[in-house]
Length: 440
Image 1: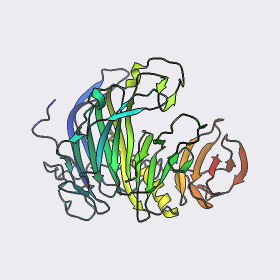
Image 2: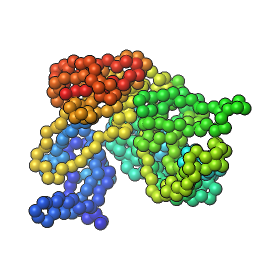
Image 3: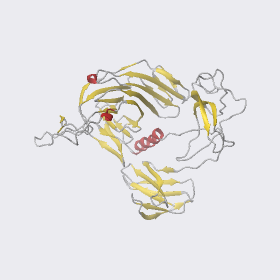
Image 4: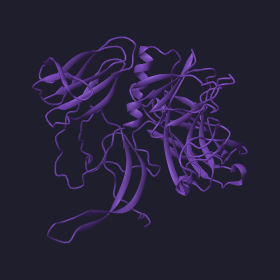
């Protein structure tokens, strides 16, 4: 449905930017009467607010004075200085916000190669020709959020079907990282589609996040001895949330929201697998792994046809892997992968009370879990020390706690931990240790 020519004004006192508008139905079901199915104007709005504690809820009134000005047609709130420090600017293909000044042209590309392997082992053949991109277009022009989108044409490798995709690079005021969102339609078979980011850090030391901490990644070299195993090592490696490059003077981290296979090239380019499409569970004729690895069976659904999406973020930081940089990378991971989620309550008659959250303090400590214990009697707090040295840490709860105990991973209680001021639980994490605390 088309938007009407005249829309009701948006009354927000806080600095904001309208990202989109549409007409939709807002349905309120009733147990005893017909539902209320209002036709409403839905606006996606970016609003600048104060920090919110982890797992906390903060509420803000959105209706300002009755004579609040409506937004300009370009979605920029009147009164915001478009050239103010920290606001997003787009100059050609350069995105900047005072913390990042990034040339997006040539930063990313797409790679497509034929994959003759199976679900156990890739067998990469015949890289397709270089991908082509359309001229970038501005999606959002700032001042709080800027985004540039580029459509890519991917020629298939070996004539296996041409996937198409769009990459959107966006920068938000106050953030120190570039978001990269990819969406596309996979139409090919027996091929690997990868997204590549050029960090410009050659010969870097590579560290990748894993289930319980970050590990150093070095290429696995094949054993040239005649009696060695015939299976060839892969150039790719797994990541949990991010992979970091440290080049002495400069460093970069690529965050991935779900996709877990990467490869780092000597020139500092990082490739992440978007789609790997194959049609067999196991094949016997793969040079990288002679013989079957499993039962030979066709897997047509593993060709992964249809639409796909992926989300990444790129952050630059010092090139020395010290305690401060490790802590910065970890805290940025939370900002990237666990962003604030906002929603509006149309029928609220008052601003609801804010709910205090849970906070973890301590340089180099990574949040791991916050859950109910298996026996239902405690709250489990778990973190990981990413450093090679002891770290003093503290949990701050949003409610009073009666007692706390250190525990094993299986939640068996150990020695007690002091609770100070009713809501602070202090502890010391040994180097690279996983610390589990039960709170009642």
